[in-house]
Image 1 (cartoon, helix red, strand yellow):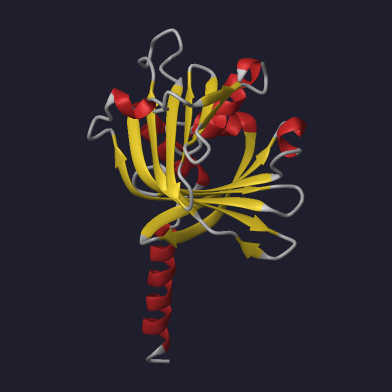
Image 2: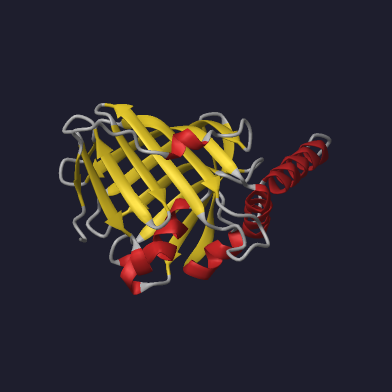
Length: 237
């Protein structure tokens, strides 16, 4: 009996500490709100891999650098929510993807071709995926998804909250049955994302060496560099 109470108190202490360290969904969403309110730009190393259910393997990772910046200012006519994104992949093949002004431009240096897609009426929907964890608030998240907290995990030494997003839209669920976000508990931004498709395949995206709002990203980053011989195509006319 002499050992029982000290051990019991120690167990209670450990349980209490664990409960204090485990975030609530509300606290994670508020952290994202705070990050979104101050978000102006981001730069990060990125790795993308596609999981193929048939062969039960992840393909060769695509790696490079991704950039984001917010157009306009909070309180402006668009409330500063419009986002530009530039993805420069370097391995295994070079490719640049730019989203700006409602257009998606994909440049493939290997074949020297620029493909332009016009988001049109789907711009807002497309943009909502760009800001998942980078400039997007927790409040916006719950408008489009049923959000639940799936615990915490450490991703590349970063303590993160794992969020499960179930799209409310039937149209979106036809593309992604669920999205998983790993949110940095300190900075309120995404360090990993997983987009699960109905067929069992999924896209896994990891971010590292993330820089927020500093240094300022030059305008040149958000341009596609082509050549005088680049062929331009637009599947949507």
